[in-house]
Image (tube, rainbow, N blue to C red; front, side, top):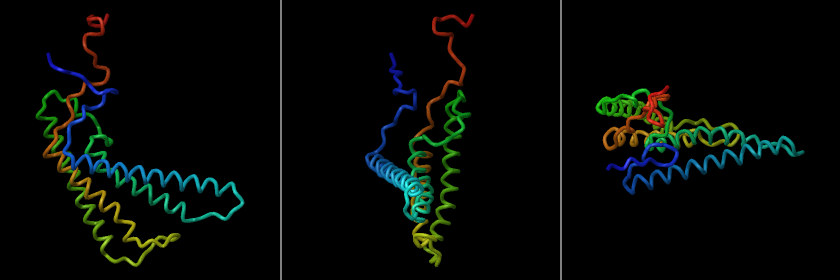
Length: 188
């Protein structure tokens, strides 16, 4: 008898990952939590400033917007590595495993290629020596692009690791497609 147990919630069965990857995931997730907490605190500060008789701090909105962009880039590799990113699950219903595997590899290689291109542009922005800075906080723009550069690099590595080391998720059952029914009848 084979074990067909699934995790609670019906999600994908987690694969064991090397300790280095698990630590990296924990660091990426911690960065995401820190950024999300920062955005929440800054947005709360902005809301309170509107209702209190104090002058507002312009930099709170600027830093919250930057934090939202940083959050997207910081968690892209984490989500890609765990197959929790936004996808179209069309090929997951293919009955042949080699089709799912081929599309999985191709998709991850395309993601890696796009991320390499973006990361190279981010490197140019970080090390290009632009004299520009943000309006309110006057953070040099080259510093602003460091987190997207690192996030794109991590996403590239995770996409390459997905293409080489891991396989696609197991074949899914199409929505609305049930077996012979709960009680064995073919649907009267």
